[in-house]
Image 1: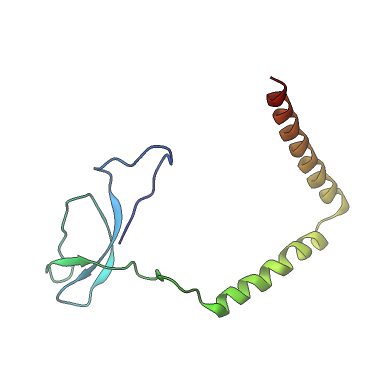
Image 2: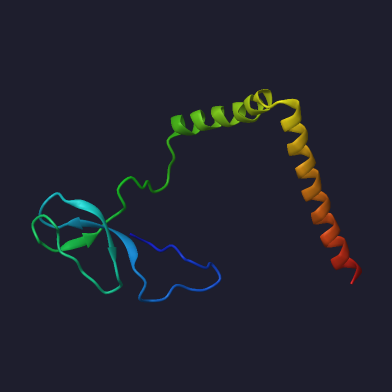
Length: 116
C-alpha cells in the first residue's frame, strides 16, 4: 500500500516523486516501510530476498475499535467544559472578542462581494 502526500492539493503529483511504501519479505519475517521511487523493487534488508507490497503496519482497514472510540468521545465531551472552567474572565473575554471580530470580518467581506 502506498501513501502519497501532495505538496499542493490542486496539482497532481509528479510521477518521479518518492512515496512511503509498506513492504514484506517473501522469505523471512521482515516487514516495514520504505521510501521508494516508482519502478523500484527493493530487496529485504535482512536476507536480501525479494519483497512484496503489504498493508502498512498499524493501519487498520475498516472497523474502528469501539472501546477507543468511546474513550475519545468521553474526553471530547469533557474537553470544552474543562477548558472553560480553567480560563479566567479576561481570557474568555479576549477569546470572545477575537471570535466576534473574525465573524464580522467574514460577513463584511461577503457583503462587499454581493454589492459588486
